Amino acid sequence: MVTEEDKIFAKNFCIDDLPDVPAGLPPHLKLKQNRVVSKKDASVVDTGDAIYSGSYVSSGVDNTMKLGNFYEDFKVDVISCTETDMEFDMIGIDAAFANAFRRILIAEVPSMAIEKVLIAYNTSLIVDEVLAHRIGLIPIAADPRLFEYLTETDQPNEKNTIVFKLHVKCPKGQSRLHVLTNELQWLPNGSEFLKESGDSTSTSKPKTYTSFSCSQDSLPEFADNPITPSHLDILISKLSPGQVLKLKLEAHAVKGIGKTHAKWSPVGTAWYRMLPEVVLLGEVEDEKAERLVKTCPMNVFDIEDMGNGRKRATVAQPRNCTLCKECIRDHDLVDLVDLRSVKDHFIFKVESTGSLPPDVLFTEAVKILEDKCERVIADLS
Amino acid sequence: MEHGSFTNDSHASFTLAEEDHTLANAVRFMLNQDPRVTLAGYSIPHPSLECVNVRVQTTGDPAREVLKDACQELMLMNRHVRSVFDKAVAEFKVKQARLATEEEKKTKAEEAELKKQRDLLASMDIESD
Image (tube, rainbow over all chains, first blue to last red; front, side, top):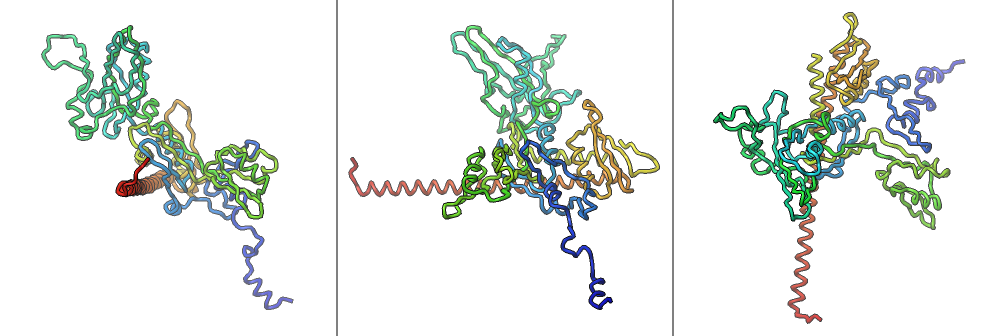
């Protein structure tokens, strides 16, 4: 016998309304979506991401990253920023982006570096080629955006070359001389070395190794800030007295990128890590709590006094965690502490070598990635 | 360069010259976020070759257009990253400057206070030992 009540029930019945029908992703997949879990036995499980938009279609979950969400949720927190170092948090972005920025910073943001060394006189202990290599690695504080690339057909001129000279002598009777980068002298007028030419009768201006049309210090960008190496205390060579060692050379710096040679890399390092997350899965109390606090070398945990002489461990500084897993070595703590990394929160660090401040370097890196996209679009159209 | 077929343009491979993981991985990520894409991946055919091959298979739309859209979206996201970053840095610098001036004010005030006390002591003409 079907009552009226049953009919109404049947009419409004929907299986999804039942409380025990699981909706959405199961918890283990949900955790996997934005966390990496580090386990005790050194295995990091499930680092991979289901990036395919239809991965969870069968669970009724859309895996596409909604662009609107990105534009609303993406966040940058600057932790510290000086002339040379910078630390910031990038929140709400994928590792593909963070890694692209890192790779571009290291290998594709241009800077100036010494490419050609003309050695006229070198009686120091360091042989010519080693000396030239050492000089090549000196970072130069010059904004690369003000210069052009020197192509094979170009003559070195004031727009693409910076010339330094190094004339040092250590006479007899003096103590040992340390040749530092502060001895590198900027030549805004270009090379002073004369090119040997066949006919000595020509009356025209003697040719040098560069053809500057004007002096670089007459240009507004360099008028009141002369170009120098970024650090003036880098040791180039040591000259001993008695041996009367001399150095007379010229160094020509040109623009380039780190992909060609690491000396053009504008950063010492650029790196990121995911934000660590330390979760206590249960109460860690008294002796255990003290042991946990003591065992962590990075002081991640702290003790909270619960009154009547009882203590409880808390996670005070999760950002300090290096995921060393020291805290989950003890068998009774392994099930109480979970070490995770947040997949879309990156702690990004940039160390500039001095050509540009790190925040400008990062902006340049993003611009370069934009240019790459633009180039692909142009190629496809 | 596109390698595809004349009859079915929903499946194609593209060779991007002078590119590497930097762009290809980001593009692959963007492609995979697009619901029109059934498969997207990339490979570098040989380490000494400066190119990547990007494979795009779609549910029917032309692969070329989908790849173009992915690049377009990637570019827009980069632009957003840049604007957010610049804003965060500017805010941080303003904050730093304010902190620095506050610090300066504080030290100045402390010095003035110290001087006042010293003057006071001197005016009281206390003999020191």
